[in-house]
Length: 220
Image 1 (spheres, rainbow, N blue to C red):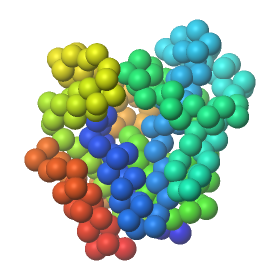
Image 2: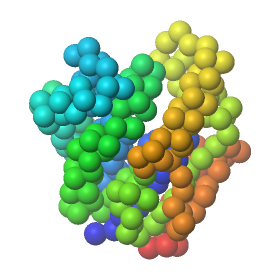
Image 3: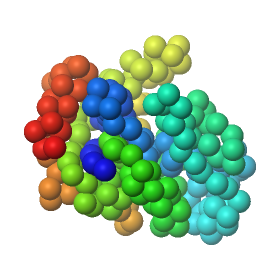
Image 4: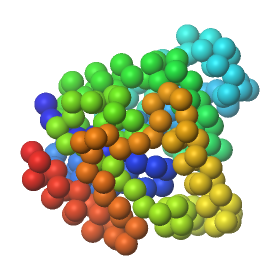
């Protein structure tokens, strides 16, 4: 099986680019951020403080998280409930950043991620795929863009969903999320020594997809 690891900060386009590249290459796309969002969503739904390690640790014994593939599309199930459409809010995003700092949560989800990579040719994106989850991945990429560009993309995405949003607030959240992800003690966000750093600030979506696809073809 071939494994491609794509890491990068929030809003860099990892999931959308990875999904498009995976579809073209016939690989399975695994968005690991959805796993953390799902755990955070469950915590928020049950009034559990996502910063309380003891409470979250106890909560983990109550839930099962599964990745399932339907017609090539990834869905996330928590205790059998499909939460895929419920985890893409800013509130859940920030909670996921907090909950992902907790070592027991990362350990809880690690096995799920690795088992999936053993079963399929995968393009897996997240924050620590190349450094922790799949350190032996065949191709490692660190996808990034300026904070301003990432905030702009997120702003347009939310506007398209008819959500009331403010660009400055989104930019503030992006910068805050970057700080949380890079400064956490457990598996901080950083490129691995083998990762190819790809900055998409000046690239369109299609240009980003073509660049990553060509890079993977060269390496594989």
